[in-house]
Each structure stands twice: as C-alpha cells, then as structure tokens.
Image (cartoon, rainbow, N blue to C red):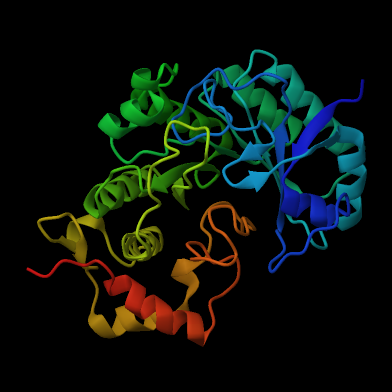
Length: 333
C-alpha cells in the first residue's frame, strides 16, 4: 500500500491534484501525517481529537484529502520554489509518528524538492528534534494555543483527558530552540478560547521574550468537536490583538507600555498616535502571522465572511473597514 499523506485542499489545488477555485493561493504547502486513528490527544477545538466526531478529512474548516506521498513529492518538485516556498507538516500524536514523519521528509529529499521544511508537533524528545534537524527541517512549531495555564488545562490539558501540560509545552519550546536556534521555533495562539485581550498580549510578550514566533489563529468552532457550540472571537477583539502582536514582535511597543480597561481590552498601544495610524494604514499587521511564507488562505474563515487573517496585503477598502473593526466592541469607561 502506498504511503499516504493528507494535503490541504488549497495545496492540492496548487499542486494540480484537484481542481479548486481560490481567491488566494498558498505559498506554503500544508501536509498532514495520515492515520486511520484519531490523535491520542483530545484538544477541545480540534477535529482530529480522540473524541471528536468530525471526519478525519478535516483540520479546522479545511478539507485534507489523502494522496500517495510519492505523487505529492513529484508535484512539489514542479512548483517549488517558484510558487511553493515552504512545506509545513501538521502532525497527529500517534505512536507511529516518528517513523512516519522521518520517512515523509526522506521522500521529499529523494525527489529533490527545493523548499524549506517546517514541522508542527507536540513536545518530543531532544533526540527526535535532532533527527528532524538532521533530516532537513529548519523550523519547528509547538502549539500552546491557550493564553494562560488555566485555559490550557481546560482546552487541551488534563481536563480534556489529553497528555499535555502547559509547563511541558513551554519546556518543549525552549528545548527545540536550543537545537534549531532562535527565530526558528514557533507557537500558535488561538483567540476566542475565553482569554482577555490583556492575557493574550501578555502571552505574546512572554513568547517574544523567549524569542519564540507567535502565529495568531481565530477559534473556528467545528461540528463534532467539544467546542462546536462556541462562538468565534469578535473581529474587534481579534484586530486589537493582531495589532498588539505586530507592535511587540517588531520591537515597536511592549506589553508593559500598553493600557487596558477593566475588561482587559486594549485601549492604549503604547506608541504615539501618528505612528499608530501609519502602521494601521500600512496593513501588514493584519496579514497572516507565522513562519516565513505562511499565508494559510481561509484556514480560519469563510471567503464570504470576515477575514481574520489576510492572506494578501489589505487594500485601502480593507483598511477603511479595519479602522472601524478596531473600535468594535470596545467598552467606554
């Protein structure tokens, strides 16, 4: 039987594996390790969670059909690095992961695919991290997802029956950084899990201090998951955190310089108003965040609805709307 790999539907479109209409094309190829079993973890938002009733063909709102790994590698060779600049493996926590993932990377190397390789994975041993680096992986992501230890436990820790713990995830990030180097380790923060803007901003600052890249996601409630009845974050909340993240990551402001109201909403970004207006008008702060070349088109959103993360640079019409969104839901005191 051929070695199968799941391919995000957008990536499948770029590779010519399936006809897909797209408003924006991914510049990273998103692949996911294939398993006939669900993940051993049980994260409340995840379609791949052990107790999730969602089809295994989904991760978030995106369809991930399986294809033979050799075929995918052959297609990737044709489009990298012209269109696809990076390959990102999403992984499921299953016993066979180590052997499976290392073999998939070897297939890419044998096919002479010219693209950087990222791996999104749970905390693993230093030996496994080292194997990934030697195999050709240049960046690693370990998703914390929740902004506080309490939320982490509730969403993806012991309260869900998962094997994960906040301290072990932080430790995994630090250990990975020692092996891959600073600026080559990332984490995810999902907005809409119950955090305040202040808590999210404090988390972003903590990661910045550790020199860990933070990629922002909006909660996407999926039928069949424990959070299927949750609500996505308000666009006002998301825009303010996006802007705060951009300022912190680019050394323009810090959590300590920002101001928050009694509800934990950001009311002062800690920089002069004229500078803030220039940054908002530029639009870069509202584009998809993460590893280089990661634009994740419509991973969190319906193309007909709200664009939480812009996979392209916002135009003037978008910026005009963003100005209003930044004020949305903001409580006056």
